[in-house]
Image 1 (spheres, helix red, strand yellow):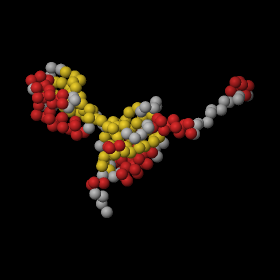
Image 2 (cartoon, helix red, strand yellow):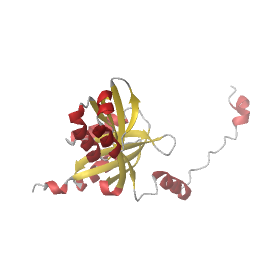
Image 3 (cartoon, rainbow, N blue to C red):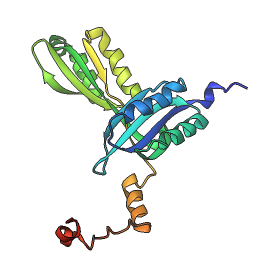
Image 4 (cartoon, rainbow, N blue to C red):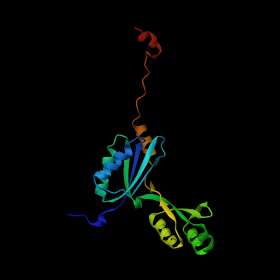
Length: 201
């Protein structure tokens, strides 16, 4: 029985990992083997020193996403994986727009359009001006369409960054785990100070 398109929606997969070479490639292979397209991928340091955070956006069914999360979590360097719908996260994307400076100077309509969309100038040159906005995909797409008639030169959008709404944060959970199951104290070698005598032939 084939799944109805309504069963598929955007999911945000959040993985907390150690910062190891080759991990990104191994995670990407998990998706490519299943022929699943990654809509957005962001890797950044997390709130915990030495721990990185992957934010992966895909369009799939919950059953498939759950299996993917479990598969990613099997990687040795992966500490924890969560998955959430868009309703369960606070997310943003950043976009940069390059437009001719003379159009901005002459067309009051364009200036008003940028102001209404919360765009701010990050670079102003004689030949072009670069504006930056943050928001959801629909918002950045709308501004692209609005700027096209005025000679939009270039456009680029970042990967999605997201924070889970209902989470205490992985940092809190990690500290709670350490409190409940503290690691053993490192035993001091009783012969350490006498190594000259102990290891002398």
